[in-house]
Image 1 (tube, rainbow, N blue to C red):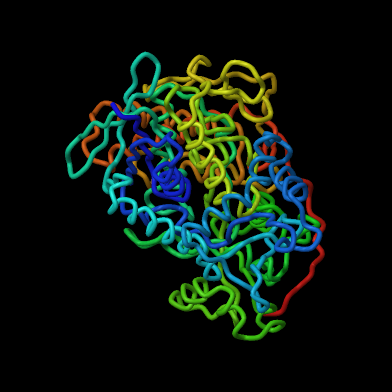
Image 2: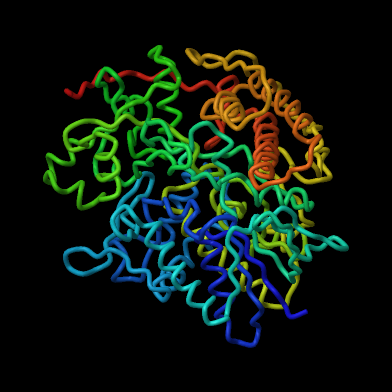
Length: 572
């Protein structure tokens, strides 16, 4: 068989990797097949607003900015639990892949002088965020890459299959040898020399998410069932500012109001008009995302507000300082979407709530996208390279998909050794700070058999929750996606406790037993199993890390210090 690379997923990592593999012209080329379970636009990438972080070449970068500064910011956001070499690669090779996007026809916004416009976002020490179409960066990048993919498909340099839901990775002698996928009700098989998972995230395990409906943990579940190690699953980032509005079935996810809005000067208010973020962190609204989301949850609890109450994002100061038309010019997508929802954000605050946004954990890979199973690669949100640590820095996600998607293709096309452990030891996926080992030799199941055991811990969690934090009790009932979302949001969301996680684990095991008795017949049933497996793995990782770090906050073992309210009020 001719060497064949199958790429599963059509977000930034999958599209870019497929293009690079199809365009290889150094004698290492292989047949490339790109599989997308929906249409090519159905991905988290398409909804990304904030942009792509990168320190550009001297003269183009912001004065005083450097790769070292970008690395320092990434490490700080990740609570120092990052893989340092992965961070170095991410930040130092960014400029190479920005150039790659430009070659694919992506045009970034320019300032009044015609230079590349660079934005500032939370937890970045310098302006280094590239945007395209204002707050439509993800859509612009996706459309540029999709156009390039379609051109290659028409010219025969790449095979494209949409509506192709991968249900299984086929293996032989411990190596991935291809995929089985469901298309138009028919199961099909495709042999491959290598498979690159670029399937995105798993936001749909929570009740509220910025992710589109396709984010159902498919790649993680495929890899786990094939025997691959996973890592850092307790670290799930919640974006603090998504519009508090009901999602329409079959419609887009709740509107995410970009970090860049707070970078321009928007502030967060509670229902009384109190600006509360300075009470919780010296960087206030520009603190890392996990801090802002957690502060919202803690503030609601301490003021006696229901946990699902919104807070309010106030951008009126931006309009006052920069002109009433600035928000529409800088954030056209958000302006149009808020207007459609009945809000004029130049004149009134927007109701917002945290929502599941990005999984730092995933399928464990080395620095070249190789998983612990030969022939299987992963890149983008489905992968865990260690670059993000315990919490992702804003606008580093699109960048990671580019850099490590390219490196995975380079590894596939270049003859050489298999998995290369960053520590120079045999493959073993361990949470970044030495927490739960999630490999198939650690007592956790290789299949969804309902038996997921604790990896044990030397620490004993206390049963007392943080002051003012109300415990969550799982509701009885049969499995449904709504029930799963409520369970995971209540027990494994922004605030977590040991007893709540234990109760969630028991309920998830019951559901696994109940739905595992029948064979899945359509994509939605396969997705249900993937979501349930991902939820169980996340909860197990969270149970075993009893200390708070990054996006993982255990309210029972590390209660936040009580804030010192400044009582600052902003008139409405």
